[in-house]
Length: 140
View 1 (cartoon, rainbow, N blue to C red):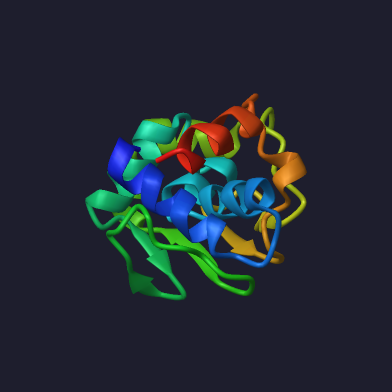
View 2 (view 1 turned 45 degrees about the vertical axis):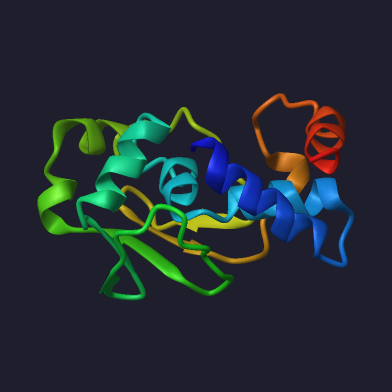
């Protein structure tokens, strides 16, 4: 994610009624490329972003090729049949080592998942000093 989208996401979080830090993490976690990664459908975030960019990810049966697309509770995320045959995707889906957050669920060994709740900022999984980010962007 580059500086521009990161800043726009922060500005959206600032205008949210929730505390800025929680809203910011929730917005970042609900990006489609992140959800594909967090569901364990790819081994890395860059690969998740590439799958989305190349049109291999379906949301509720419709192709979405925008990595910043915000998923909502109830939406079903699937990987196209063509992408499901990629060795890295097969390995990531069959690898039970990655913990899937409580706000997501995956259908067994299939490259299919569902968003069941709003992302929980406590489960962000990336060590970040949110206060430093808030103070940096609040000055701009």
